[in-house]
Image 1 (cartoon, rainbow, N blue to C red):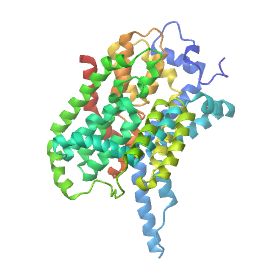
Image 2: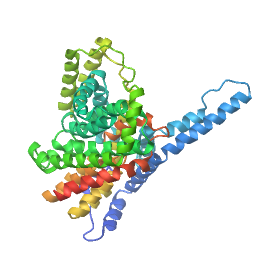
Image 3: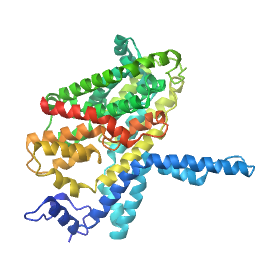
Length: 469
């Protein structure tokens, strides 16, 4: 009946006149059977992210065994093909891209190649992954990070510029910047400064994870002061006519309160461990060996202008990609004052998000019915939990497709989506950027379970602030 439409638009499904959620989902699978296959592949991709560390540990064991074999034969150790393959499977950033290959093969087998290519090239929109690549690369440049560090250092100085003062300042002010310079840019700057001023001091494992979970939650809710910087808010601002004033009064101040309360609680819990870092700070350099001359203010001003232009034109790839190319030329011309622009982390993050939106575009058939028909509290918690397994922008976008949603329910679904944005790496678009930058401080990779456990408390605090006030 609808073979030529893939994926089938949500409003094109013929729902049963009455029945439970399972009846509705069964009906949708009957109308487009590949739904179940696409969701199964997506579930396998999510499970793969949980076993990424296992692949990485296996890769190290295989490489060590291969090195021993080489020495036994009198040969110099060399990379093992199997170890490299296992290490590749253990890279979280490539997981969803790998499973996109399986998805394309499945669509081709069940439908045809033309349908698969049409879905990839015409149905899925990759603007957000491309934007994240550009904004992450620009925000990580020496002039931008130096400018942010200079501003935050003035605030940290009120606490004596100790590691604890830097920690509290970055985790409080940095995420709120996401409402103005976009969440991916804020995440990049926060992660780089935390790496220099905190993670380089080698805190305990417990504190490392607590900080990462806190960072992810704070950035997710910190972008809600405005209606133009956070992806989950962008999805609903125009359809629901949410203005700057609406966001500030309904979300912004509550998010700021949640960030402060969470940071204070974590500070009190880990105060001894944070104080212990002061001894390390006295003998450890945290400037990444930066010996380049001071950046002249005109160069910093040009970088900020490029950054502002990209933020304003975030919906138009030809404009922000073109600006990025000009930016790279400027950076090359002023290379004496620049550090090398490392494009590998932004490209990996873009690849991660590209794979995520490709899979996510086929999940509306079951997410939509789950959101529809729920009351305020169930809707909030459903959005929070679903966000942990889908990018929160997808959740809010699907909510715009639900007809006659009341203002109370609109608030509930967006609040739930941003509240759950720190529970997993895939819950919020900027999270992969943070993991890519800070991953080197986690020797065995970032554990999904440890991350979720570390983010639970600030997630519950955010939920309380959005509901009580």
